[in-house]
Length: 89
Image 1 (cartoon, one colour):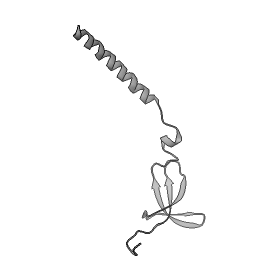
Image 2 (image 1 turned 180 degrees about the vertical axis):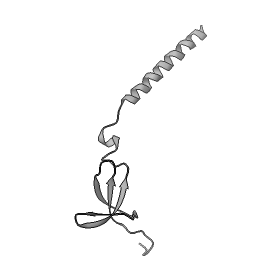
Image 3 (image 1 turned 45 degrees about the horizontal axis):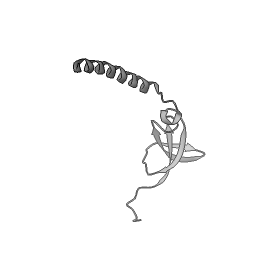
Image 4 (image 1 turned 30 degrees about the vertical axis):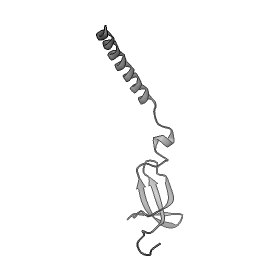
């Protein structure tokens, strides 16, 4: 790799703002905020959503919305199918 053209790749702390969980990963993110973890100072990046708080990963997704959509479609289809039969006769 060429010297001086690549961003610094270092350990960064990611903070999930919904749950308060933190984890350390390597990244090139730039941050003005820092945090001390286990006696060492790391750059801090605040995340709105991570796998700890996203509904898909936590299992908090609701299937009720989908069932409501299907029922709406069936009701609308049944209404239009009846009018088409009347027009055909």
